[in-house]
Amino acid sequence: EMTELFTGLDGGGAFREDRWTRDGGGGGVTRILSDGKTFAKAGVNRSAVDGILPFGASQRLGGRMLPGEQASFFATGLSLVVHPRNPHVPTVHLNVRYFELTDQRGRLRDAWFGGGTDLTPMYPSTNDARVFHCALRAACEQHHRTLYPRFKMQCDEYFQSAHRGGEARGVGGVFFDHVRPDEDDSGLTATELFDFGGALVRSLRDAYAPIVEHRRSAAYGERERQLQLRRRGRYAEFNLLHDRGTLFGLQTGARVESVLMSLPPEAAWTYAHEGGTDPLESALLAMLIPRDWAGEED
Image (tube, rainbow, N blue to C red; front, side, top):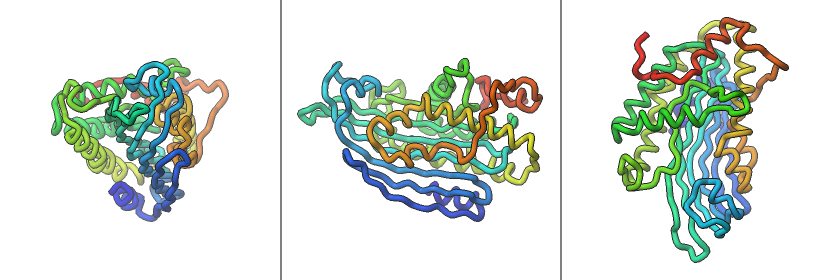
């Protein structure tokens, strides 16, 4: 469904598919569109992996296991990242996942859902942030009125680069983790949480596709291109240093090419760059300060 959506939005490129297996158990399917008409890179990854967790890993994941207890895991999910060509079109990321932890006797000890989607602009456009957040709020409210405000706040808190003074990666979206069936504040069952994850994936048709269609033909020059490359560099920094999914994949022996599919095809790091000296970049940085995008009219 997602490869069909982004193939249509690209208007010229096609996805290649790689099926892979993990030595410790399980595998997945990775689809990559490279050097397309609209997208420089788009990746969609589905996986279902299982195996033994290293000691302490279950605690780092936030699972309910005793310290030092051996745990087996099962994890399945879908993730996608899209890096457009045109700097006016923001990057989008989405992930939905499910985890199970069992003890040495095979008894289920913990299970939870996680995921989210967020928008990373490379050019200042407040209207894009509003479109994205309003669509997410509508999708969340179909399942429970508490989901959007809680998950929006958690997204703002999660997508910060601590090594950059807490700079936000983008304008956020929604993010959730360790949402356990029948235990979350929403009281949603496992089936309802699964349905919510599917709705979140489908929400990109309203949250992101209109932005692509509206912005992909906008004119830009070298100034905008260099800003895009610098912001892609910050994106890569977050994914390599802080992203839980990246760390989990690398620590559990998943296919490296699939784990790192989220990285942009090109990025730049300018030594001792002062972002506040360029009014365009200053406006973009000001957009990254968390706010109530779905409630703003100006």
